Image 1 (tube, rainbow, N blue to C red):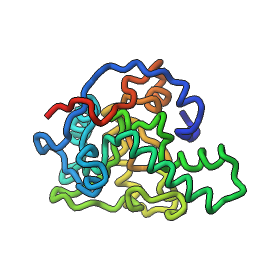
Image 2 (cartoon, rainbow, N blue to C red; image 1 turned 90 degrees about the horizontal axis):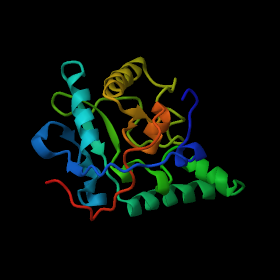
Image 3 (cartoon, rainbow, N blue to C red; image 1 turned 90 degrees about the vertical axis):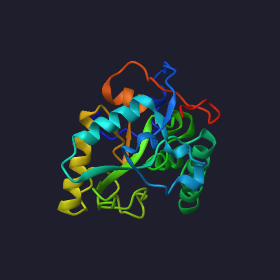
Length: 223
């Protein structure tokens, strides 16, 4: 994909899912990744889970980072009900600020920041929000705070944004290079959002089907 395809694009929803049945695992197991707990209270620990294949690729990506640099994991799995709350809340904000927008305009604009619940990569355990840290776990500056909206950041949350410092751009390149080499794809409106095995990944890579579909939170976990 050369243009930015939003999550709301019908092409994403049209990708079939051939669920492989891979289980969710806790990324905190083994302590190989720095895990930020900022999302913990919102999802009762669900945030720290991913499909095992995604976690393995994160660990491979971390091995490719320059010395003294580590991945800082912030959020992975998001239960479908929580995803819907996030989407509806942000859509309501946009609707209030733009009462002239159609339903489709609101949905499209909202999907720059929160995926529509029915296709959300986070709810499949396929997506991760992450950034870079130094060897002591201190978060590095990649140009905006994580989860900055397009409105508050003047578009600097877009991965290829021009209105960030050279240092932040260089760090985004470091992050992108390692994660891309490990097989993950980025959602271009959010520099921190990467995924593998979901519908967006399949569309971006030319795969015929996604590997992972939505997972309910009561699905058995690997301890």
